[in-house]
Length: 425
Image (cartoon, rainbow, N blue to C red; front, side, top):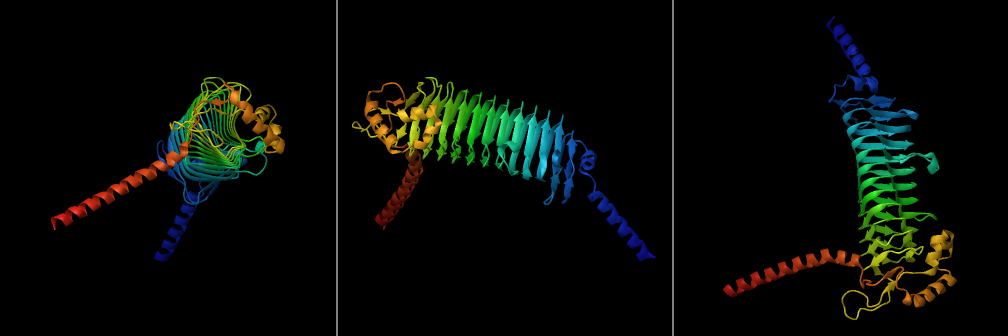
């Protein structure tokens, strides 16, 4: 009798456990108290759910969430203080939608074969950290964005990697954004700003996209210490900066792009302390203003360093690897001015298809003729004080010099100590 009772009790316990394990995601969310923590089972959830209260949801090692290609898995709406951690999503229209909410934290999220990832609308103080996503196959027009924010403020995205989407990181009418230490590959735009202000982007790696950073109709942006490389298709660029004001592009590495920076109708903007390496065109100006500056940059191995449509810019104290002048007084600056003006470069601004003729014999001859005739140029694309050595070389040498000084000082002190001991003996 006793064994029969234990057997029935054990079977009922298993049934209760299976029932709890099979409980719907929405039911688990509803049963969790406001401000509580919900730890999900190691199972697949094939459903959609809505969050309308403060809650922390933590996935297990094998938790997988999906809702089909027509649905969003999780919708956070009209609430605050929501945290999502350790979740995996697959094969859905969208993973997470945030609407009219604040203080949202999304961390350690992985997605594969998703049309879009996280969409944020009319919200504030949203953080996305450690986010990984691979989009669906197909043309860019058939894909969504990795992380997209609309009509929001204080959006922070960090330590994330997104590939094969339309726009990896898209921000429209967003005030106050920080995009730090992210990566985007094989997408249309790596980082796309529209109508934004108070923008900060640092330490991002954007490569093999159509455009690395697209910034349109924006104000007050600092884009620094990013690596923008191998945007090399026919119409590609590292940065496309369009109709924006007070934009600072600083300390970036721009490598192997078709056009490294395309500056169009910009006001009060500054390009400084960047390295332009092996780009077809380093900097292109269209509709520029005199208060835009280009200074303290390194131009190394580019086919065309700077070209414009004839509008003026303030260009000074850059290093050009094709500068052939001398520094007689040894002040670190060339005694003769550098003129970046090239007839062929001007034509390429107006007719991009001309780029296919770069380095043809006729273009090489034309550039040589320009070098002779440009000696009389006084205004357009003229650097009166070209640097004689690359700025990046000095930056690399500084840590080495400091270490040598430290090692030398230690050797000197050790020798002095040994000498004093020998004198005493």
